[in-house]
Amino acid sequence: MTKVLEPKARRWRIEYCTDLTRSEAVVIPVGFMVEADWNAARWLGMIFRRRLTTVELDHVNIHTWGELRAPEPFMKELFQEAWSSGRTGAADIAGRYPAYTALRFAPEEIDDLQLTLDHREGFLASYAHLHSLADRLTPVMTAQILKLQPKAKPVVPDFGSLTEAA
Amino acid sequence: MIRRQLAKPLVDIDEDWFDNPVQDIAIDVLGGFSASHDGACPVKLPGSQTAFAKPKRDVDSHLIVAREKICADLGRALSLPTAPAVVRRPDASGHWNKHSLLSLATLPSGKIWGLGGGAFLSAVAAELERLRVFWTWVGDCDHNAHPGNLLYEVAADGSGQVSLSAIDHSFTLCHGNSLDPLRVPAAIGYGTATLASSEVMDARMAMIEEIEKLDAGGVEGLVQRLSEILTDDEQDRILRILHERRNGLRVMLGVHPK
Image 1: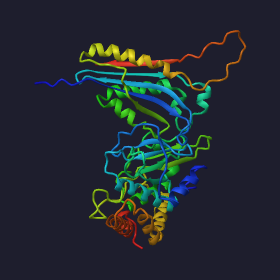
Image 2: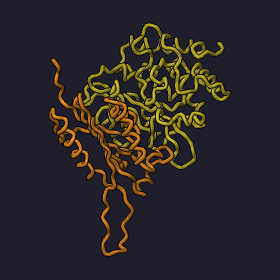
Image 3: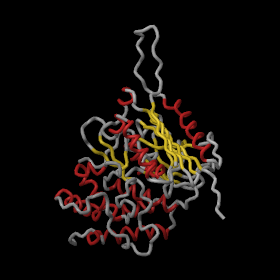
Image 4: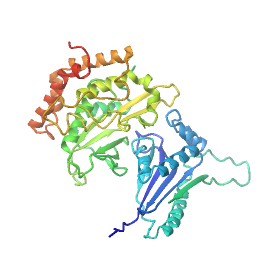
């Protein structure tokens, strides 16, 4: 008899800590990775900021973390690798960026994504969940807005997203 | 090359943790335990510095804690870039009901060696070889090119200087095998074992000689001051491993005997 396995979902918060030695250091949000697994089907998604602000980049050690100069191609590469490496791909990628490194994939409890055995429904739910995280990708450091115009444009997150399902 | 360089206030913590190996330290947990074998979680220290507490609570801990502390202290005695560590007593809250190990975060922008560290091999080859000799001495089997147990960073000031931090010394002192001190072979390290440059060979010999010259009483003291977590038998076993491996260091590393 085939055992029906409960679907599992995992989420990682991708962030850059500007100084690992200090607990109060500014942490720059970079993206999120979400994975849903039904054993017979799998869904992987990543949402990320295409670029960091100039002020944020001033606080990144570019000599060590040059990939953050232009996050988009770097995140795309990670996503492709996580997807093409199979069922453990996402966890393997996350494992390269543990809590004790400046760029880290921090596991988060995921209680706001309910999955059923219907993986097609789950794909849609996972996609919606991924995009609900966009609000948490607002830059944490921006240049002072100068009042040269009557109305200043609000800073909105500029993010990209990638998803795969099979 | 400056071998062990810590910025203020980390250098003060390093000194304090060396002088006072077992302490009551208030911590605030900042995140969950990692998925590694022992597990470690980030914590905030009283002065707002960051450390990593291990092992996770369902792991039998006292030998892990002792090995990490002993290796951190021996590394310090040899001016190596081992992360400073201290043994933390169980706290009254009961949340941490055993002695645990705090390992200080020392690199502000640390990255695991497995992600691009090899590009800087020539810049830090001597230091890596010194570490390899040290790991050989302490019977380490978890720094054999393990991508995550060595951290590096390139200086943010653009000088190109590379700093290292060697972490996770729980698989040392012949863990899992206390009967044969010489069973664990020479450490492989991170790419220097087969380098034939004079810089690497000089570093190897110099570190062997430093270890041979370390005061035996001092080494014993570093182990025996952990009597709060180690029995007399456990202390004797660790000291025997260190003694035998020090005597066998040249053979293990393939260099001429004294």
